[in-house]
Image (tube, rainbow, N blue to C red):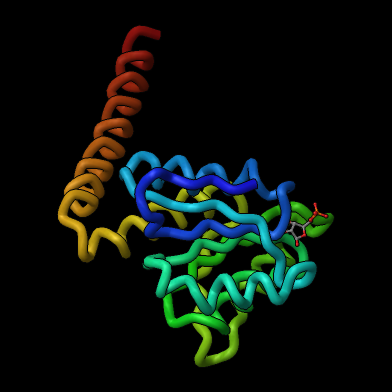
Length: 174
Ligand code: RP5
Protein backbone atom coordinates (compact mmCIF):
# COMPACT_ATOMS: atom_id res chain seq x y z
CA UNK A 1 0.00 0.00 0.00
CA UNK A 2 1.33 3.42 -0.93
CA UNK A 3 -0.27 6.69 -0.01
CA UNK A 4 0.99 9.71 -1.94
CA UNK A 5 -0.14 13.26 -1.36
CA UNK A 6 -0.19 15.67 -4.28
CA UNK A 7 2.41 17.84 -2.53
CA UNK A 8 5.90 16.62 -1.67
CA UNK A 9 6.00 14.37 1.39
CA UNK A 10 7.73 15.79 4.47
CA UNK A 11 7.16 12.74 6.68
CA UNK A 12 7.63 9.06 5.89
CA UNK A 13 5.41 6.53 7.63
CA UNK A 14 6.78 3.00 7.47
CA UNK A 15 5.40 -0.23 8.86
CA UNK A 16 6.61 -3.80 8.82
CA UNK A 17 3.38 -5.34 7.55
CA UNK A 18 -0.09 -4.40 6.38
CA UNK A 19 -1.31 -5.96 9.64
CA UNK A 20 0.14 -2.82 11.34
CA UNK A 21 -2.05 -0.49 9.30
CA UNK A 22 -4.91 -0.02 11.75
CA UNK A 23 -2.48 1.22 14.41
CA UNK A 24 -0.43 3.34 12.01
CA UNK A 25 -3.52 5.13 10.72
CA UNK A 26 -3.51 7.01 14.05
CA UNK A 27 -0.27 8.69 12.93
CA UNK A 28 -1.73 9.45 9.50
CA UNK A 29 -4.80 11.06 11.11
CA UNK A 30 -2.62 13.43 13.16
CA UNK A 31 -0.54 14.44 10.14
CA UNK A 32 -3.75 15.06 8.19
CA UNK A 33 -4.96 17.27 11.05
CA UNK A 34 -1.76 19.33 10.98
CA UNK A 35 -1.84 19.54 7.16
CA UNK A 36 1.52 17.81 6.71
CA UNK A 37 2.13 15.82 3.52
CA UNK A 38 3.35 12.26 4.10
CA UNK A 39 3.88 8.97 2.34
CA UNK A 40 2.98 5.60 3.81
CA UNK A 41 5.00 2.51 2.85
CA UNK A 42 5.19 -1.10 3.94
CA UNK A 43 8.73 -2.46 4.28
CA UNK A 44 10.43 -4.71 6.72
CA UNK A 45 13.84 -4.80 8.39
CA UNK A 46 13.73 -8.59 8.10
CA UNK A 47 11.67 -9.38 5.01
CA UNK A 48 12.85 -6.55 2.72
CA UNK A 49 16.10 -5.37 4.35
CA UNK A 50 17.68 -3.90 1.19
CA UNK A 51 14.57 -1.92 0.29
CA UNK A 52 14.37 -0.50 3.83
CA UNK A 53 18.04 0.50 3.82
CA UNK A 54 17.72 2.19 0.41
CA UNK A 55 14.59 4.04 1.51
CA UNK A 56 16.41 5.41 4.56
CA UNK A 57 19.58 6.32 2.65
CA UNK A 58 17.65 8.37 0.04
CA UNK A 59 14.99 9.86 2.35
CA UNK A 60 16.70 13.17 3.09
CA UNK A 61 17.52 13.96 -0.53
CA UNK A 62 13.89 13.24 -1.42
CA UNK A 63 12.77 15.94 1.02
CA UNK A 64 11.65 13.93 4.04
CA UNK A 65 12.25 15.64 7.40
CA UNK A 66 11.36 12.82 9.78
CA UNK A 67 10.44 9.13 9.51
CA UNK A 68 7.91 7.28 11.67
CA UNK A 69 8.42 3.50 11.87
CA UNK A 70 5.95 1.03 13.34
CA UNK A 71 6.72 -2.66 13.76
CA UNK A 72 5.72 -5.52 15.99
CA UNK A 73 7.39 -8.60 17.50
CA UNK A 74 11.22 -8.50 17.15
CA UNK A 75 10.81 -4.94 15.88
CA UNK A 76 13.97 -3.78 14.15
CA UNK A 77 12.51 -1.47 11.51
CA UNK A 78 13.06 1.83 13.34
CA UNK A 79 16.63 0.89 14.27
CA UNK A 80 17.46 -0.34 10.77
CA UNK A 81 16.13 2.89 9.26
CA UNK A 82 18.01 4.99 11.85
CA UNK A 83 21.21 3.13 10.94
CA UNK A 84 21.00 4.47 7.38
CA UNK A 85 20.03 8.15 7.79
CA UNK A 86 20.68 11.19 9.99
CA UNK A 87 16.98 12.18 9.91
CA UNK A 88 15.12 11.91 13.23
CA UNK A 89 13.40 8.52 13.57
CA UNK A 90 10.31 7.90 15.66
CA UNK A 91 9.55 4.30 16.61
CA UNK A 92 6.18 2.78 17.47
CA UNK A 93 6.09 -0.68 19.05
CA UNK A 94 3.03 -2.47 17.62
CA UNK A 95 1.03 -4.86 19.80
CA UNK A 96 0.76 -7.55 17.12
CA UNK A 97 2.42 -10.54 18.79
CA UNK A 98 1.54 -12.88 21.64
CA UNK A 99 3.65 -10.65 23.92
CA UNK A 100 1.30 -7.74 23.08
CA UNK A 101 3.98 -5.27 22.08
CA UNK A 102 6.31 -5.64 25.05
CA UNK A 103 8.78 -7.44 22.75
CA UNK A 104 8.49 -4.64 20.17
CA UNK A 105 8.87 -1.97 22.87
CA UNK A 106 12.13 -3.44 24.13
CA UNK A 107 13.46 -4.02 20.60
CA UNK A 108 12.63 -0.45 19.58
CA UNK A 109 13.66 1.44 22.71
CA UNK A 110 16.90 -0.38 23.54
CA UNK A 111 19.06 1.17 20.84
CA UNK A 112 22.81 1.18 21.33
CA UNK A 113 24.48 4.58 21.89
CA UNK A 114 24.94 6.42 18.62
CA UNK A 115 21.75 5.34 16.83
CA UNK A 116 18.79 7.07 18.54
CA UNK A 117 15.15 6.14 17.99
CA UNK A 118 12.52 8.30 19.71
CA UNK A 119 10.30 5.51 20.99
CA UNK A 120 6.60 6.14 21.63
CA UNK A 121 4.08 4.12 23.65
CA UNK A 122 2.88 0.70 22.44
CA UNK A 123 0.01 0.72 19.95
CA UNK A 124 -2.50 3.38 18.94
CA UNK A 125 -1.56 5.98 21.58
CA UNK A 126 2.05 5.68 20.43
CA UNK A 127 1.06 6.08 16.78
CA UNK A 128 -1.02 9.17 17.60
CA UNK A 129 1.88 10.66 19.56
CA UNK A 130 4.28 9.82 16.73
CA UNK A 131 2.14 11.92 14.38
CA UNK A 132 2.11 14.81 16.86
CA UNK A 133 5.84 14.49 17.57
CA UNK A 134 6.59 14.54 13.83
CA UNK A 135 4.47 17.71 13.58
CA UNK A 136 6.52 19.23 16.41
CA UNK A 137 9.71 18.53 14.42
CA UNK A 138 8.24 19.93 11.19
CA UNK A 139 6.79 22.87 13.16
CA UNK A 140 10.28 24.09 14.14
CA UNK A 141 10.63 25.39 10.56
CA UNK A 142 6.98 25.89 9.62
CA UNK A 143 5.01 28.65 11.38
CA UNK A 144 1.66 27.34 10.13
CA UNK A 145 2.25 23.92 11.69
CA UNK A 146 3.56 25.55 14.89
CA UNK A 147 0.36 27.64 15.17
CA UNK A 148 -1.78 24.55 14.60
CA UNK A 149 0.12 22.74 17.37
CA UNK A 150 -0.78 25.54 19.84
CA UNK A 151 -4.39 25.39 18.69
CA UNK A 152 -4.39 21.59 19.14
CA UNK A 153 -3.24 21.90 22.78
CA UNK A 154 -5.94 24.49 23.50
CA UNK A 155 -8.64 22.32 21.91
CA UNK A 156 -7.48 19.33 23.95
CA UNK A 157 -7.61 21.34 27.19
CA UNK A 158 -11.07 22.69 26.29
CA UNK A 159 -12.25 19.09 25.71
CA UNK A 160 -11.13 18.07 29.22
CA UNK A 161 -12.75 21.20 30.78
CA UNK A 162 -15.96 20.29 28.99
CA UNK A 163 -15.87 16.72 30.35
CA UNK A 164 -15.29 18.09 33.86
CA UNK A 165 -18.22 20.54 33.55
CA UNK A 166 -20.53 17.73 32.33
CA UNK A 167 -19.36 15.43 35.13
CA UNK A 168 -19.94 18.12 37.79
CA UNK A 169 -23.40 18.96 36.51
CA UNK A 170 -24.38 15.25 36.27
CA UNK A 171 -23.29 14.84 39.90
CA UNK A 172 -25.34 17.88 40.99
CA UNK A 173 -28.50 16.61 39.28
CA UNK A 174 -28.22 13.05 40.68
C1 RP5 B 1 6.39 -7.37 12.11
O1 RP5 B 1 5.78 -8.59 12.34
C2 RP5 B 1 5.30 -6.49 11.57
O2 RP5 B 1 5.58 -5.15 11.87
C3 RP5 B 1 4.05 -6.99 12.24
O3 RP5 B 1 3.73 -6.22 13.39
C4 RP5 B 1 4.44 -8.39 12.68
C5 RP5 B 1 3.58 -9.45 12.05
O4 RP5 B 1 3.61 -9.32 10.65
P1 RP5 B 1 2.64 -10.21 9.74
O5 RP5 B 1 3.02 -11.64 10.00
O6 RP5 B 1 1.23 -9.88 10.14
O7 RP5 B 1 2.92 -9.79 8.32
O8 RP5 B 1 7.45 -7.45 11.23
